[in-house]
Length: 599
Image (cartoon, rainbow, N blue to C red):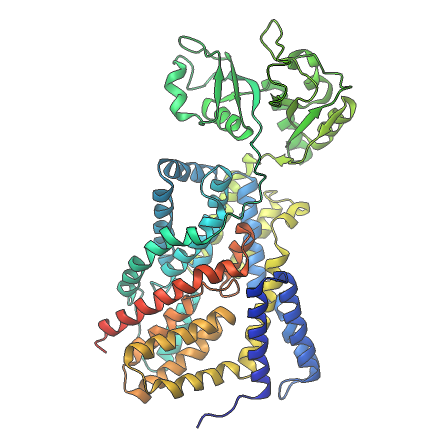
């Protein structure tokens, strides 16, 4: 006989619905909805505590998310991801993928989705996404597909891959363990992999071709055309360009790099070439040609002082004002490097001034004019002195150069963290926390910059979802929903029974947690199989699959929250792309289970 839910269970379901509506409507920010949810739980349980608990226990439950291991894990992973970015450790991998994306954007995305899917079958979902996410953010900065159009499909591919083996996620292991405790036979690592592979083939076209079109370009970069800087590129002694014609290297150089008055015949070491391009194009050209766009001695001095002081090297853009000392001078005659210890990498002349004051010295160097924008590299104090003493206006967009000397170290820390978690030697929470600490201790991430790695929106969202999941479980709301499900399934065919179980567990997963869904759903599915005379294994697999169909909300799984800040996603983005994928996977997996087990 089906009974009514307790008042606490009813209240927990209402709070869950209210949180969902708040996120979906988007009138209030994610942070406000999350904090309101925590406040409602805290105040409600203080005045109306759960049976056999004290009012203060309700406060502990409501705020337990802020000290939960899942939050510590995600923050640690964000810090390590920041370490990979600021040290440039992922640049080689990003350049390889960039070449694939340059060949064809769609092929590049397809290749990435397949790699993510295959990796996550044997490695836990979270480390796989942590490794891939900064690469795609870097690719977006290099002009490939925007991160907001690739991270959700990439995350979905990782989650589908993690569903394919018993070791793909910790939730899979939990379901298999509970099923074995209930008396079911042991499932090996690849027991249900063929089913998932088939479903992945069906889902892949949606991830590849449809999902990116459902997502907006959330890039916050300014839409104006990037500044192009004129400079002299000096070839290094060991440059691969030495002894070759310029035409040989052009295919390997950035498309937006332009050579002015290109020389005829083989090039020589230390030869100066007049070029122009964006800051990114100049950096890529220097890396490819092993050259510099400023005198080597000043760049070496800046790097040496940065190493001695522990400061980051900055690159800023400054505008020349009317009373500046350097107007009418060239870079070699300005004395900027000697006076201030900074390097001017290039000069940008606004289009409105081009042709009017393009004055060159006898040596072919551009004379600085009012309104020019200089690209300046140096330590923060030196740049500040230069701007103040020479009447320059510092523009927005200060950029820190990657600390490439720490790149190998940062990559080793990340690989060690992922490896320890993947083989099960340490829990992901412990290994990621240790990795974050190592990033600090070794200087890959500075303590005063940790705020840039963390997202307040993600932190409060995680805390709210953890508190809500605990309330759903301890109030009996999850158990009552299971009873309702069992009562109605007796009238449905096997495929519909499997689909209903999967949808029920999926709802729990997307609004509570994977662990809650697995803990509640597995015994319920096992009991329903006996009541309806159906084999228990496909019913339990329906629970396992449902626990992994966590695409529709950002609170469903920690990887969903990891990409939220990087992609500038809103709750509705997950709904728009995730709900169709959930329906597609539920339909496909239900049919495959019926066929596989002859139901």
